[in-house]
Image 1 (tube, one colour):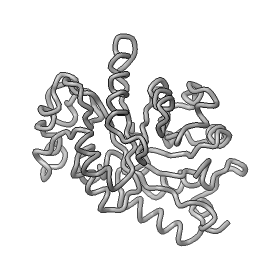
Image 2 (cartoon, rainbow, N blue to C red):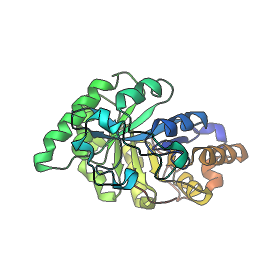
Image 3 (cartoon, helix red, strand yellow):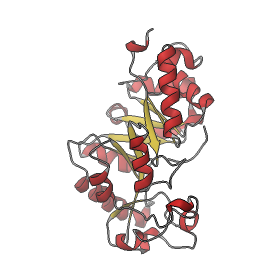
Image 4 (cartoon, rainbow, N blue to C red):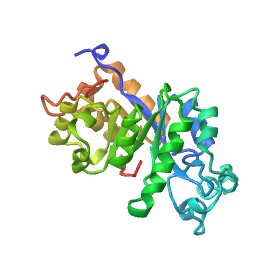
Length: 279
């Protein structure tokens, strides 16, 4: 197999270039663009006034201190919450951006993988529907952006709307939450790196769906993901992952050089062409 016989794996920036800038912020997204990411993964929640904002945590303790909840603050208030200075002092004052702003400033330059964070079930199902509906309004129908979630119901809604859908999984059983025809219609399956084994990869190959792997940082983790046929790696350090992928692809087939995956798993670019940290 030659390097040109399969597509080079994509480098996805996990919450932007989050190793060097505050996650899910405009500085992290700008750094990801500058460092050569192929796609940016980011997280979406609803604000109190029904706007879609870019944030992973429903409670802001880790990012900003205190016990403020995203759903209790309006988008304008969230834009003023300092989520930069706690971990990256030089980015003090950086706020939580609205999805509309990110689409305008970054989405015209790179594809985005937009993760809809499930609001829960039962009484919170209505919030899930509101989040999905608002995202479908904001994201242009014919754009390169994909809508992703751990929640099979949200993913099903994306598919029913005729949009690019990504199922994120942290356990192998999650693949069974979609019907086979739904699984085969996905834009990708995005799997936690520690799920990679022969049985799991075979199931993805049978569905003929690209395999993305998170969260992948460091040469050993990158090589392992490529050996199992990842068509994209999602990590926090864009420049390091970009350099690793480029180097592996120049010395020969990335999958062949990366390590030994099992025969017959479709490891070299599964489907249509680290550390454990939730996407």
